[in-house]
Image (cartoon, rainbow, N blue to C red; front, side, top):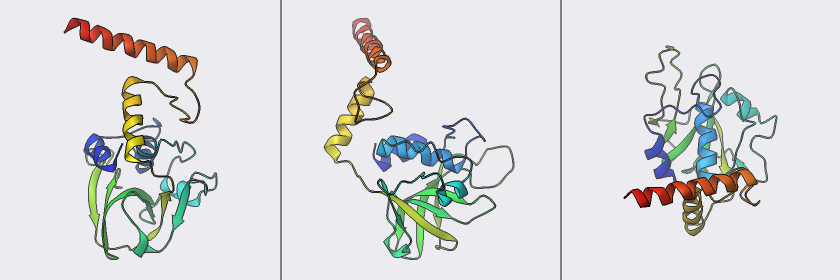
Length: 189
């Protein structure tokens, strides 16, 4: 999935992938890495601060590059900054030189407990105050590979946990069920 599709899919909606602590900024990052990089960062939990500290290798060096030079930040980067009590994390969607940036984010710390404005949204920040650094995923998929994987996902024909391994028996069973559903849909039409 490309970034534009990710924004269209989640903008204005809550994302609570781990079903803990409601929908947090961290949940959006977990969903982003799964949808856009086909890589799960389940060790990233609770707050942005835990991911920033990276004590459990949430962002392994083999897959992510840590960049501290703000002039090198770019679209798709996962940005951390020391805002509020538990810090914040988002995905850069646009940069405006060294002075401003746009992100897609969630749970912009208002603590009203109504969750009305804590859903995923696009926001522009006028400066890099409190920004710590970004993590950039090293391996970008080619458009051809992205298209093939999207098609495979639609048809349920891949290993959901590790794309480098063959599908499990359970996943093959799901593929068969999905194929059956598709055939039934065509027959009904």
